[in-house]
Length: 434
Image 1 (cartoon, rainbow, N blue to C red):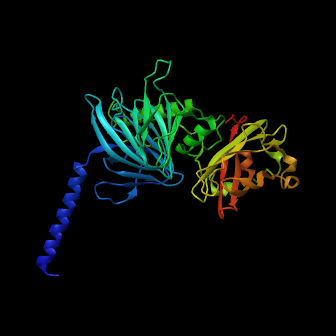
Image 2 (image 1 turned 90 degrees about the vertical axis):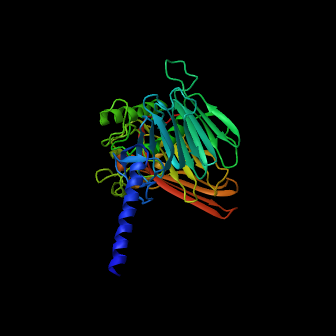
Image 3 (image 1 turned 135 degrees about the vertical axis):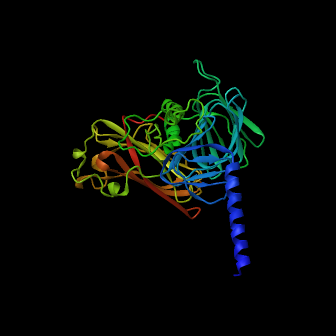
């Protein structure tokens, strides 16, 4: 290379670096990352160079965030809007305009996949639909409230956590308007939701059961170090969402402007486990119930408990369940709260809720040898959009804190199979009806 060409190359490189720096300076900051757990990737709008993001980093307009399995974070926008990302979530801030002096602004974000919880900030207070969330095949207009969105394979569930416009308490009124195929459905009551599917308008609002709501919100929290004593409720979710904003203000030392970098935050909503994941590390689960626990009599549990979980299937669908265990009566299953369901599965397209019948500890496989494996459901030729052979099993592990479970579905009509497995955490008391 000649001396002239080398000098020209240096000038070009220097100019490119200046352009990149100038672009970074010119980018519009939208917020700050917080409470990053696991691995979350950032693709900056400036250079499109994908890299991991940590807590306390600036996030700019056009930046894309994508969390991995068993990972998540909070995005604190400058107007005090909070968006919590669960595992395998994909979010991009498309538009962010905010005037701190007037509180007027506009926020638009795209939620391509995953589970999210949001708490609107100053921008959406007193403004009609100042915050818009885009999901596949629809849009969500939000005014001064809290909610959650779960998007999976183009199908989106939107839930109002509260408060809505129809509340009889002295609370700020809010609402969520969901639009698809030219049809708009309004959510005005807490824990009511709607669903958008490809090419269809949103369905009429319906109230989510405690289990359905928990299966939406569970992925937003890190695995607990100890099993929660009570099942999470909508009140827990609302309180946690409020704490997201309060913690951000306190940590940053700001009263109305959170543009300063935040320290590490801990999501206060820890009364749940990561859906589709394992709430205990692999070594613990592989070790079974522990060296000092070999029979049910050794388990340090009395009375009634229940296990619940939501887990992905190999065909892209998922399954969830809730099952009671009564250590006094030595039974598992039975009753209206003991069911499992399959959702969005090509292998079992019409299979919905299925009861888990009661059985005795003594009737389980391997009961005489110690901790048995329960056959929670095992039937042939089940009507599932074809003829399905279904086997659902569970084994209590980790000193009674976890239920290792697996589901196998074989659709002999369609020639399709699906399976999944996971570890469900323990909750005190019997499960609630759903």
